[in-house]
Image (cartoon, rainbow, N blue to C red):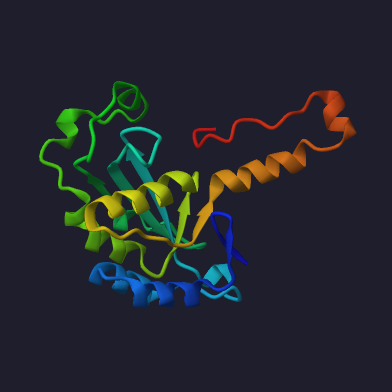
Length: 193
């Protein structure tokens, strides 16, 4: 069973097929038509892509994407030579507090394309793969809102959220009276940890 925010999506392949029919943008149609894996697919048969965005802030409604990085992989191998990275001209201004976090400055973004210019290539890299992120609200929400601002159409795709997985593991590991007495609490689920 798959989830879209608070709504259940029972069948991602069928949902993406419907999205392809509804989409007005040819790039998005092609992305959705590529489809995704069925629930019965073995993990060893799945192609993944790790996706990471840097943004001008943490609010997808007010901030925008400034950097996109991706690395394809499967359970046997990480395809480092196929990794991609783009700087993106933001739709809003860089904020000093975000520069401290990601280290991307105005000079790094000078001459960077807007998201529309790399959209087809980015979608081709993601199409048909399972996207792996650390905190889906960044990659999925920012991608959706930035596309809505640029092409008047958003995007949705299945993700594996490593932050959600780690939070669940830590909750289980810190349960029970013994752990409570020992003061064992869930640790940081930030990517660096």
